[in-house]
Image (cartoon, rainbow, N blue to C red):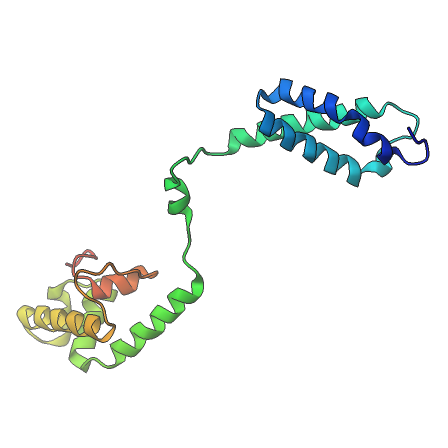
Length: 185
């Protein structure tokens, strides 16, 4: 053992640390990971070790604290064996939504004025067919027809097929395109 550099002494305690970690975790792979974490913590904080004091006790304290910290952390974690929970947390990149919104705006601008107006009133603004028809001064059937034609034209301009799943990041866009969404449908 070198009194000059306590790092030289770390290796001497590995077998005892591993045995202690296995007794705590009852799993050799997890124990090996804990010993490694302990060594990294000890190495990076070696300046806090008082030369001449008990290195083994210091290392075992770090190992024990690492074990209890991991236990506390695991209590807050959710087991997700099949990945279902993780998939529900996934978030699409923001740039996809911007690109899709740009495509949507370009397609919406290509619609006839009457169709765009009907789609925005009924789909995006949430007015009923009756309310939208009254605002535009047309019959309810005309408003339904304009909205339906606008949806079909918009889907065609955006290259969306009926059997394709639409991956839109914006609920307002979905409500404009889809006849099954929104309270006014």
